[in-house]
Length: 382
Image (cartoon, rainbow, N blue to C red; front, side, top):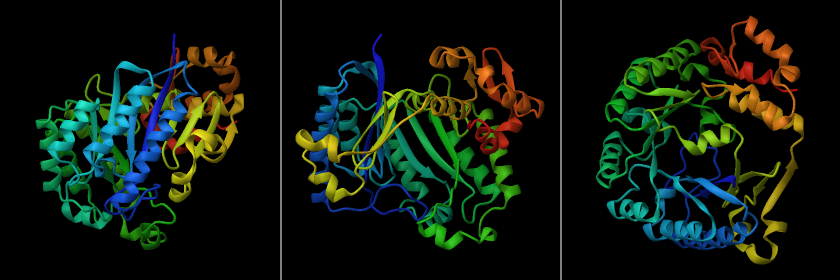
């Protein structure tokens, strides 16, 4: 059986960097975008030669805003991927898209190139909340984008939402959930806003919790998400992700369950053959790398070989994010040791406190455990 290798392709450009965003992204001239795509295509070709024994079950074009690129550039990237990697039949191929950057021409080209899943960054159905976030689109512009996506024949769509926003109330969050649910996307990702250091939001809100929904209201938003989406036919399969039956994001599941992945493009991260590394993070330096001659020396940085202990830790705190939990038999298969022999004391303590439950061979978080998941998951650090 062929080994599996997921591909993540980073497009670091956006029309305007959102005030809460700490991703490696930002605006750039069209000429810089084109030069980047040329270099990315070179990297894809060069890196593929290192992984002939792998088959690719999923490809994810993330950013930034990949939909900012022209149809031609996305097609060039996809053609290169298909020509040098062995894509699994029916592989899931996702592109992130923001309202206002999607045309019918792009959608048709994406479909022809093999892209079969679109993730639309809405965040909120309230225009005031969108403005507070620094988003450049309105809810009406999102609706037009969503309609185009459906008209182009895409049958697998995710919508990103964000709670605990400045100016957001429980009522407005419930309204967003219902509006989006009624559109019947196949998948909804619902995350809480994180105030990251180095962003305009950090300067504005750090140390000023009164400007954001308080802890009790945030918890009510969390409970409303689960209930409203359940009532609208979405099953929760991961702490922050909901899907219609059979429409779970295969790429993300691979990440949470330890599938190896190769990051392509500026700053992207990889985990292959037990080693973590990431790409050059400076755009100018990245574009000057001679991919065929010195890519391994200059492109890949921060190499770290994980110990068995670190692999076990990741297996537990990533796998427990999923509602099905972690499998004791899979743990034994991967590490050659019984999970209860390694984590027995922790598991017993968490079970006694009703934070996890066991249903052989799986161990999973309870509803209470999900509420304080950061604490629970930290318990598995050896």
